[in-house]
Length: 184
Image: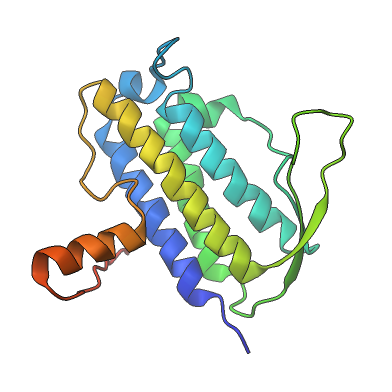
């Protein structure tokens, strides 16, 4: 039987990484935008990430996840505290979810034309946890760029894919040593 606990734990590590980053920012850094360089700021990217996790968790009971049903909650994009609280709740929910893999039906817009209905795709809990991890890292990379433009340097591994971190570790040390972050 396939289990989901390893992927859930990896997603939790990435969420903790985001919480740690948000705790280090000012409100101005979190909400800043620039019309031409980064029209969506850190807060808007964090909201986007968080709402994907919320929709995933909500869809587990029915077996149907609709990633297009985001609420676009302005509290998440405007308040670091709100974002961190919700992220901690998602971490708890990931800890409490079943470790058994199961099928899911996924809906996600495939076109920007509203008359084209989004196709449904077959997936699994494990595959969606992999998607959420990659999606989070992708947006973290954008967040890191936005912060660097503002003169804020995130940790060197923020927004970097695990395969890249593994490659860097092998290149520097000559062997791969997995890095783990222990959280409460």
